[in-house]
Amino acid sequence: MCFDISSTKINKLVKKNQNATFYKDFNYEPFFHYNGFLHPTVSIIKLGQPKTIYPSTWGLVPDWGLDDISSFRKKYNTLNAKSETLFTSNMYRESALDKRCLIIADGFFEPHRSYDESIPYYCYIPSSEFQDGRDVFVFAGIYNELNNTSSCSILTTEANDFFSEIHNVRKRMPIVLDEGLKGEWLNEKLNKNQIAEIMKEGFTKKEFKAHSVSKALYHKKSNTNISSILDQVIYNTLFD
Image 1 (tube, helix red, strand yellow):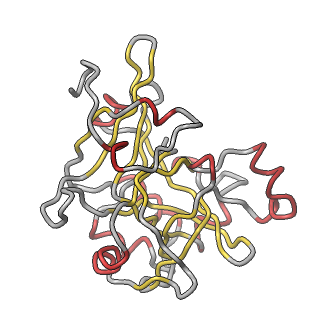
Image 2: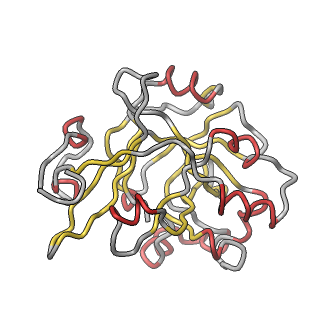
């Protein structure tokens, strides 16, 4: 699962990295932590439109939920979509073929269960390209139009060895696409088998790192959209 993300790079760095420009009405702001359950605005690149970065509300709303979005969101959690059931899900199958997207980020948080407590870990790809030492990447996603904007979900899959140790209860991970497959994911001519193959084999080949961070991440009343939320906090657990 992936319910918390970061995208800390300023506008021009995101544009350069993705070789795309922001939609004219999108007032993008970097963030250190967004909690998906608050349905924040994230940055996506839509199928067939690789040169434009659009705003999108995190938490896909299918067509049949558009009449009462508030009630829909109280009943359903659509921050993530399981890749294994994408084409059979009444929630996501309409978007799977013709509304795929890239969701831009530079980190995400996952819970690690240690004895009787849940400890948040910040996961990122090390990079010398950026001053903060973290690479920009994209999640494989799907979206649906939502009034004057859109809504989206991050696709997840069974965790690999590294993320199985971090997310050690449910053992899931978001699909961070390999750089070479970004364009293919936005190819309008893909069939179900080709899409399934990318979801199964397309996780980035770059190495992830992770460290534990403050449990304030889980406190609803705490301001967690601050740089210090990314700082390592030692709990004497597996990765520290």
